[in-house]
Structure formats: C-alpha cells, structure tokens
Amino acid sequence: MCGIVGYIGHREAYPIIIKGLKRLEYRGYDSAGIMLFDGQELKVSKTKGKVTDLEEKSSREMTINGTIGIGHTRWATHGVPNDVNSHPHVSNSGNLVIIHNGIIENYAPLKEELIKRGYVFHSDTDSEVLINLIEDVQKKENLKLGKAVQIALNQVVGAYAICVFDKQKPDEIVVARLGSPLAIGVGEDEYFIASDASPFIEYTSNAIYLEDEEMAVVRLHKPLKIRKIKDDTLVDPYIQELKMNLEQIEKGGYDHFMLKEIYEQPSVIKDTYRGRLHANLGLIQMAGIEDNLEKFLNANRILIVACGTSWHAGLVAEYIFEEFTRIPVEVEYASEFRYRNPVINKGDVVIAISQSGETADTLAAIKLAKERGAFVFGVCNVVGSSISRETHAGAYTHAGPEIGVASTKAFTTQITVLTMIALRLAKAKGTLTNSDFHRYLQELEIIPEKVAEALQTNDKAKEIAEIFKTAPNCLYLGRGYNFPVALEGALKLKEISYIHAEGYPAAEMKHGPIALIDEHMPVIVIAPKQGHYDKVVSNIQEIKSRSGIIIAVVTKGDTQVRELADYVIEIPETSDALSPLLTTIPLQLLSYHIAVMRECNVDQPRNLAKSVTVE
Ligand code: M6R
Image 1 (tube, rainbow, N blue to C red):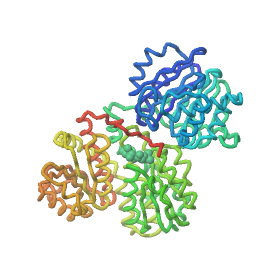
Image 2 (image 1 turned 180 degrees about the vertical axis):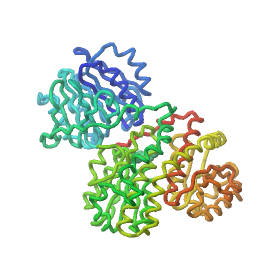
Image 3 (image 1 turned 30 degrees about the vertical axis):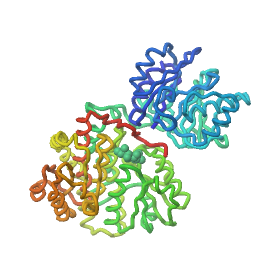
Image 4 (image 1 turned 120 degrees about the horizontal axis):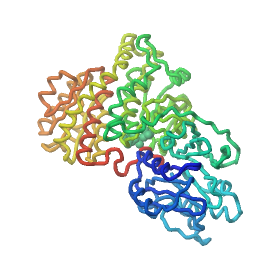
C-alpha cells in the first residue's frame, strides 16, 4: 500500500524523506516521488520503480534544499504504475501539491465537473482529481488551505490519508485521514508525518495517530490542532509515547526481513505470552478477556474475520476453540463477510485478526459487526492501529514490527494469543479437564524452545529448496490443526516465489486434486505424530502409489513416514493442538530459500502490499 512521509522543521527534509520512504518499502509499492520547497522554488521528482530509482533520478532533478517536503511510495489503484501517475501530484495552478494513500471512489464525476470548469489532468489518478478539487474550492471561496481541504474532503467518497502543501503558505502541511493510517511525530520545533512511526522513530518517540475523519494543520512553531472533517469540532491531540526502537525495524545482520522475522519467533512468542501465561500458577490472565469474560462465556457463537495469513490463524483457532471450549466457531474472509449481509445474532462474539490492524476489509467487517450489535474483539500486532481502536476490546500479539510482506511471526503469535484465549475460556467453562488445562499451559510455555529447535531445520529446508526451486507446482497437505498450516505453507510459497501452490486437507485429495499427482509433483505433507497420523500415512501411500514426490514434516524419531517419504524434515514433539506453531516453521524456511534461489524479491514480492488498506 502507498506510504506517506512528510517533514516540516529545521533539518534538511530530503534525507529524512528518502530514508523514511525506504522504511515504508515493506508496505509494497511500484513507484515513488518527493516534493521539496526551499522558500521560493517548489520541485517535484517522481518515478516508476524503487526508492533507489527515485534517489538516482532526484539527485539530478532536485536542485534545491529545503526544510519542508513530502514523499510517497505508490501502490497503483487508479492508473498503471508510471512516472506520471506517481505522486506527488501538483494542482493546475502549480501551487498545491498532494500525496495520497487510498481511493477516491467518486473521482470520475468530480473529474468530469472539473474538466468542464477548465481543469486539465495529466495522470489517470484519483489523487490528481482531489488536489484540483481542493484548488477549485480554495479559489472559489478564497479560503485558507485547511478549510479548502476540509470542504473538498466532505465532497469525496472513499478512503484517504493525505498530505497537502500550498506553496503560498509554506510553513504548514495539511493532513487528513479516513480509512488509511496517518501518524504525526512531534519533535522540538519540527513535525514528521508518516503512514506509521518507522520513518521518524529515530527523531522522536512522541506520536499522534489521527483517527478516521480527522484532519490537522501541521504548522511550524504552532501547537497542533486536530479537528473533525465533518463538523469542524476540535479534538484534543493524544500524544502517545512509542516503545518501538530502531533496531527492531532494521535487518540485524539477516539478508532479509523475512528471515529475521522467522528467527525472531522463539523470542516473540515469549513476548506474546509474557505476563499472561503463568504455567506454575495454572493461570492465564489477559486484561481484554478478563474485562469481557461474561460476553465470551455467554456467546452462542464466535465469528472470526480476517484476511490472508491472519485468516489461516483464524482457522487454526476454530479447531482450538471448538476443541477446548465447545463454543461453535465460524471463520470468514473479511472481504466476503462485509458484503454478504451476514446473520449476526445478539450475543455473537466477533474476533477480528490482523497483523497490521489496517486491513480495509477486516476494518469494514468489524464496523458491520458492530452496527449489528456484536461484541468485537481484536487480535492485532500494531499498537494504536485502526483495528485496535475500532474494536471493543482486544489483545495485542506483541510480535514487534513485521516488515517482510510475507507474514511469519504474525501467524505464530496470533495462534499463541488465540490459544491462550481458548484456554482461559475453557478454564472458566470447565470444558477441559484440570490436567489437560495444566498440560497445555506447560507445553505452551516451552514452545519457544521447541520453535528454536524447529528452526534448526534450516539446512534441511535449504537442501530441499535446491531440489525443488524450479518446480512449477506444489501441493501442501495437512489434516485437523495442520490443514490451515497446509494453506499457510502454500500461501507463503506462492507469494514470495511465484510458484503455483495449493493447500488441501489431506483427505480431500481423493475428491479431485489427486488427479494432479505424477512424478513431477512435489507434495508437502504435514504429518506430526499426534493427531490423525495413521490417516495421513494412508494419504501419503495414496500419493506414493501415483509416483508423487513426498516431502514430509514429521515428529522427531518418526520411522513410518520416513520409510515412505522422499525427504523428511523433523520437528520436536508437542500436542496436536499446539503443533501448528512448530510445523509451520520448516514451511516458512522452505519458501524463503526457494524464493532466494529463484532470485525473487523476498521482502517485497511483486504486486503485494504489506497492509492492504484498499478493498
Ligand atoms: O495485516 P493483516 O494481518 O490484516 O493482513 C492480512 C493479509 O493481507 C496478510 O496476511 C497477507 O496475506 C500476507 N501477505 C500473508 O503473508
């Protein structure tokens, strides 16, 4: 998704903006641009491609220095990725400049009207329409920029995070948000603006997160005034102290963020349960759950909404919740749920899962569920994110910033949080025996060590990756708790290596996909000792007898599958319900190595964005 960086203060804006855009690269983008103002002259440089391409181009074009500027990484929605469609966009007069993240849905009629009024458009973007609309409003009524932005925004339908600069008022940047994130870093005599705090964390740890439908005029030497776009009421700015540090968002010696994040899993899973899981006391304490325990206990049904990897974590949770708590669970793609007039009964509890906390479909599903009277609980990673604010209550995963577009640690920490919730409810409902409850607590507590052990499969995963790096297709099979892991394994391979991969419940093979099996088809079978082991062994035999190539993820010491499989990867033993936390590790490593060997852009795969803030 698009990334926004802005600066106004006493330092040179150019390096701050370029470095900030690099920090936002993880969001996914196809072009980048920058605007600087030196007090007299305004310059824009933009290009299709990466921030390094922008650096190269702007080193020639940016002949000025300035202490105010805005920069953007664009993820195309309206108009192909090219230099002209890149942001910033300048208004017809040449005075106003905009960067925009989001979609203006009614841009076509607005554009038509502006064309009738003599405006000329150079790009295919909705953002260029917005900046000219602002200019039109400003001119017609001779308004200050802030007021013109506000009036224009009240005419648009859609989502946005914007920064607008007016050359005639060069001590301010007007910012606004609806549906796309925007943070303001508050320094001494300087302000930073960004899609998240990573571009400014080294300068200030004080941040204000704009809420939906809020705007602010960020003016030098003036306290920040935030107002509601609709009714102009003033809002008290809430300055949050950020806990994130620079090291957390840098690669720390790894070749890619994805690899770093895979290796962080033992420690972040610990961070996830720290202070919440007390195995020695037989306790799970999570504030969001304790405060709303009755709602969960009285729930007739739990609905889980999420997208992508978070949806896979939701599927794992479905198995865990139903097994531990006997509460019926349904898991839905947020993008389907929001548009299908779902039946939501009073007393339903909705759990929304999202790493970024900004996924537009998940956010919309939450709003719909709330409108229909459901209690909505969020499981998010990013503190202060839109979803964490929109939900009634929630639990953070505390995984730290996830920069690689492919989710890894987000998945395992989401499962950890959801498992703890299920355990807490099971305890309250008495649906698990005391001994099972204590056993799960103890097993969960030592999972980080087992994840560390599972990470030792790296060499094996690399060896297998070397053999299958050119495979055009791949099948992933699992049963029970590990069926969602098969889906997740396939998603990881698809998104970073561009190999076509499918995940299936192993027993579904015989209903169709088995036709695909031949001596060229690698089939990754998740076959830990616990669970439906014998059934999975039968499924392996079915594949073997059709000459498929078996790569099996097995429990350490396994002999039966080893005899059948062409390659095995061993992971430590744990109970069936917790096994996804381990079985997923070699699958992450396998995808990673295959993608590296295929020379793919692991951290920023093509066409993908880290947080999908458009529908
Ligand atoms: O931030 P979220 O968890 O809401 O994101 C949901 C999906 O966009 C995300 O999981 C996506 O599928 C990842 N690229 C998977 O690796």
